[in-house]
Image 1 (cartoon, rainbow, N blue to C red):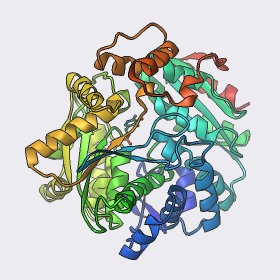
Image 2 (tube, rainbow, N blue to C red):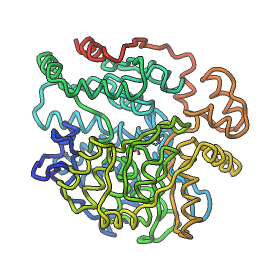
Image 3 (cartoon, rainbow, N blue to C red):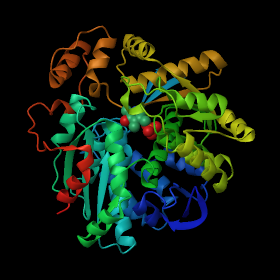
Length: 494
Ligand SMILES: *Cc1c(COP(=O)(O)O)cnc(C)c1O
């Protein structure tokens, strides 16, 4: 399978090169030239496999360059019992005869980012070998919380890689900070930035585009790379769990092979829901793709009107991983919906960076609306959604609560009662404050204490690694001014 850039179709790369580079030099995103379709027989075969084998099989369709036995080994390592706390890896929880929740947070950092970031480092490190790269890849990450920890956990002690994470000094939850500064591994670094997430992200972007730094690092034997969801190596592992969830519904006789299922995905950068769209392109019988946002509702408006407009206030919410105004992966969807019109996509993206706004052509909008429904959920409704599911004995985090509410809204508005799966992207124990408040408890002081409080009050069990944060020694305490992030990189890569 070859990969092309969404902004220049003539650029063709191998999977290994696309994964190594992350982002195309023209600013576009790498996308496979075609999507392999699974036959009914293949889906039946997948039904008989465990999660690891399903993932390796599906990834193999896009990575013929990689040896199947390597992919099988990567999946064993990524999703094995020492990493995931349940054998199903991505279990489905049944809520009623037509509704299920797909739990994607059973990995080492308790957020769905693990599903991809346990796999990407292995793909990257193999890609370096395949392309004859001798330099060490340095992964720079700016994080608002979940990505940084999941990326470090995935890259810790991976050969020929180093990883440095920047987080806004006061912009992540206490649990998230504790998770990061206690990270183990000889090749990892963490640094707080005096500023907000945008400052950290802009700093990283500046370093990426600074030729002097690139040259200096090349002299030291390093090149810079990204673990952001623009990397194809992050999207691909996510396609697997949509297909796997469908297989599980067949295995438990909830649906028949070929029957349609709707998916509702809590969305930020559009990576997760894009993977669902790609699964549909591979022949998975997906009905509606329901795109759920919090009150940063730029995607809801886009799907309803065809106008993408980031010129709006930025809201800080209790679902921070969805506090985002530029959803990078939307570019891949537009490329695909337009039949691969790279000039059109380039034009929209130029307008977006110039004016913060673009409007898609009417026929594109029509196709978008056939496939997708967009809805959003405000803060009060998010809390009410947590409370509502808790009454049914199911404790969910605020991101998941947004999806549950938007799915309900979609069903009420459309009358579409197709069996549906909403996606759960984080453990409620990552967001104890908001969850405790939503279920009518007053959070005690101290983040690790709240974990204990929530276990006691709800009778549920915290993921072992979050509970083990209590008593863990911090390894990192550096803080940098936002103008001096480049110095932090240079001193990390001595
Ligand atoms: C990253 C994240 C999301 C958003 O996923 P995208 O792929 O960026 O759309 C939703 N929920 C949680 C908990 C996340 O960490």
